[in-house]
Length: 214
Image 1 (tube, one colour):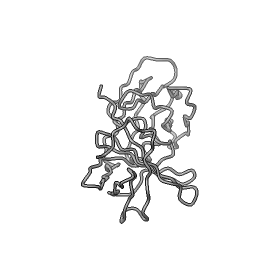
Image 2 (tube, one colour; image 1 turned 120 degrees about the vertical axis):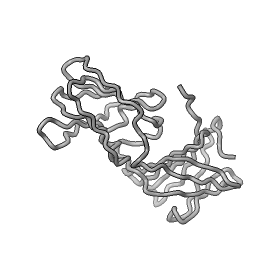
Image 3 (cartoon, one colour; image 1 turned 90 degrees about the vertical axis):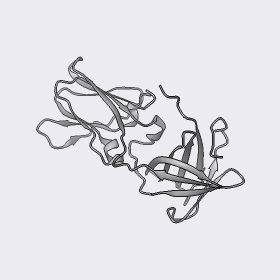
Image 4 (cartoon, helix red, strand yellow; image 1 turned 45 degrees about the horizontal axis):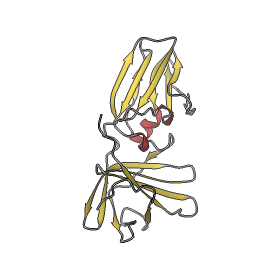
């Protein structure tokens, strides 16, 4: 298994008292960005590069990003259908995903939201027609629906780390490429045009073990 990259976090001061943002910069040249106000969460992730004192961030295309690594099914089990989801490092992230089922003959999605983090597997009725990774469909605007058939168990492995699954209610941040000046104090200051205003992202002091762009 690949070694998990280390991250250095930068966070912005709250705007209007409610809106915040974070940028996690990984030492494999990937990054994750989240911003939100109150109950909203907007995420994106991609690659970063450094040129002189400027860090450039280029997000992946969420509609074409290969999110699912593998889906393993089994017809062995009891009278229910179980689903478990792992990140790319085999961390169980089932509790971070809004899973739903589609019943036979019923075009409506039945909201069986899984929010109890004490469990690592989501159970569905045996008559479920399809299993839907609903929150991931919303974020990536792709189809993540799997026909149940005779299957009793689904094991889904993702191509992203667990930390990138911020909230089940997150959506994709429409911000395109953006840049940030690395200041003398070690903090990052974004610049226009892709940020509607300049923001300073402060380096989190606790992340001393992580590598930063230098």
